[in-house]
Length: 319
Image (cartoon, rainbow, N blue to C red; front, side, top):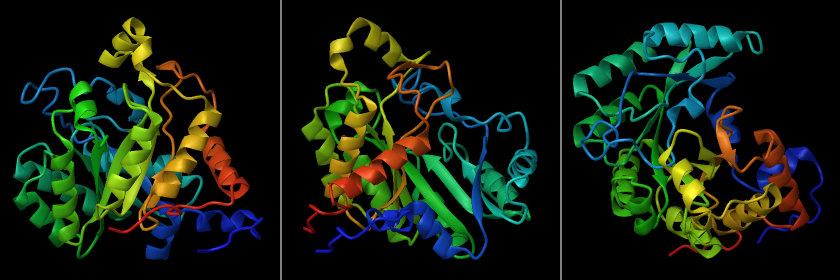
């Protein structure tokens, strides 16, 4: 077991957990930035195929940049995204991030058209595709396998919880077995595979949340995004929170930091952490009102790892 007691400088933070940005830097000679694009997709949990209104926590307005609108072509969105980031790093390249709604939920032909339009952009080095585990086909995964031979490709699945009771309560429309299969089939083709988890969903105790780490660790994941539960305006969950606040365990910043450190200790050291926390636009969050930037939370987590002399995977066990 590695001893971290002598660590004291910022450059050593990444040794306490596997940082996705560091992994990404190792794969490219130039700096890489994601540009979010909106492909005009919907979701089977909104259009009536599986449900209407979406998952109880979901309001897509919380993560759509201003330049990213479905009325614009993919090329125009990428051009505007490059212009938006250009003033910081003039020589960097980009990944087109299909983020909003379910970005594999369309005809195979239309999906290919949109993905390949993005890949034709001279500044684009690859794709990141956010989707649901119940919205990928064998045909599409085979296509992803082919393009991953020439471009960077990461497919991100919204897993959200490993508990079927929670998935049903938040009206997710699939169970955890569905997520396991999607991740396994994607990774089996040599495609980088990511997952999202929400920490603090209704009726989940601290022990249940920490148990997610063990279950996720046994999946062939490249990366993981953690999100604190946020009660967002315009969602079913906002109504539930108003009517039944006892259903929710919302964390203070310090409580969340301790939870994430405990989570990391139980997580496989082979899964890169892309984010610890999410931040919705000002005025949209009902609770918790942290008023703390993402990088500040990350800094607190890194310092707590050092304070506790611990690291990602400390208590993880291979089956």
